[in-house]
Image (cartoon, rainbow, N blue to C red; front, side, top):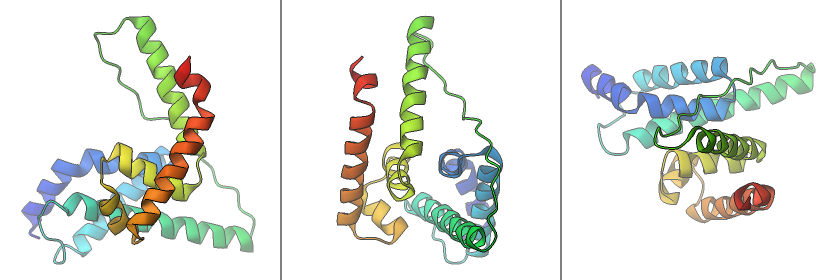
Amino acid sequence: MTKQELEACINEYGKDIYSFCRHLAGSQQEADDLYQDTFLKAVELSEKINATDQTKSYLLSIAVGIWKNRKRKFAWRKRIADIQSIVDEKDVPICAPEEFSPEQQVLGKEKQELVRQAVGRLPKQLQVIVLLFYMEDLSTRQIAGILKIPAGTVKSRLYQARKRLEKELEDVLNG
């Protein structure tokens, strides 16, 4: 992949990759670092990346790999010396369509926030799959490739996540 093709990928997929990093990392600072490291790794691996329709999946795969490594390192360090992490709980702004009344916009934002919080409470292995499936609109086969797990496992985890979210959000979605 040439430098121009990499720049085109950043322009085309940059917002989606950052949004995914933001949801995955939880804080803006960690998301910024993850986003930057993802594209630095992409620059390192630019010879291996082909400018195809799989480029976005490849970049998401890099982001997930870096995130998993960081979590693994943090868990190991926490076992050695119990360190508390500082987490910034700022959320990505939610944009509501302008055609809704202000009351509908507020209710929509509240529901979105409740869903976002419920997804955030899922175990990380389920949360990553939900974010890739619903936020990035990837197929189960693409997610399996990104996470390097069987497609059946992706489907199973997606089913588990849906059931947990349905149970937790039953009142919110019905009322």
